[in-house]
Length: 394
Image 1 (spheres, one colour):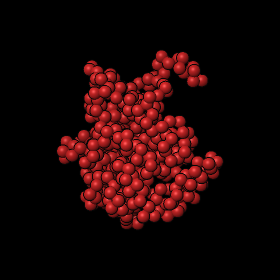
Image 2 (cartoon, one colour; image 1 turned 60 degrees about the vertical axis):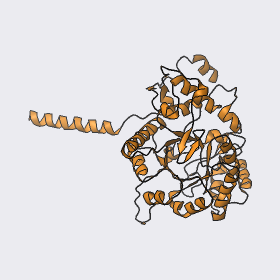
Image 3 (cartoon, helix red, strand yellow; image 1 turned 120 degrees about the vertical axis):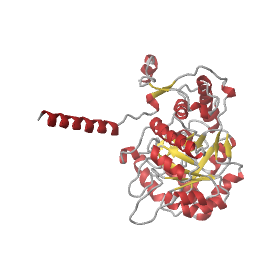
């Protein structure tokens, strides 16, 4: 009897242990801090560039493929500064000859009518000729032209991107995996798709080790990391899915390193969303990112097409919108956001200056060196000793 009771208790302990292992702690940007290095480097001497396929990009920052953020004109401006903008090829730019008029209508819509209006204007058909035209407009400026498509339209639109001289193509949805099951039968074969493309294929989004590893094995040239952290995204509320960005980046970086050890091919990961300040961006690199993709900070720039408004790619969904139009305001310029000078003390401008300074303090000469910076759990990092700042915010 005692033996049976002991066995039952042991079984309960094992079950409880397994449940605890399934429910692990995950961390976002506000949960951690970076530890300064034992050697410091002049910020002017650090190297912020990164590699995407055959291209060496000066700035490790991409603009998200959102219609309130990226237009051909914005992509040209960011390209001149050394960054990379991704154009939404299933958005307003490829549905309308004059997208500016539609963007103005969205900007002026009352809050309670915004989502319904978005659903309406995105019902216009995507026009193949506009895909090529918009990408060629970006190329004519001297910037790299990169467009984003969903997996469902990747095979249809990829040839148009290649013909227009795109530097890369992004295949992106809320969650993307190398394996997809459907009783309807169709699925995008990522291995075949990547193999057929003469240009780099960036794939996203994902947040796990296993999914990232499989996408790399399928031939992806870079991986977008992040589900639901964006300022205009509501997937975490609507679907309940997502992993805080520090944990997601670290897990996907581990997959990158594992794949590199196996294959000798280095596939960069791009932390996508949830970053508002220079400090957030620095933490993303320390967690293992090779580059970051941001949306709402760029949406606040005078050069952005949204006129101070921002919404996600899933916001106009006809049946289950996962996002909302948010008013971020026009508060800065592209150059000031990236390089300053600024009088703001909250880290929302001069993002590259913040990155360079952080790299210098942490002793990281390159972005790859940032992956070795020590990270500590620091739930009080924003409140410790900040009594007067916090009091002033009330």
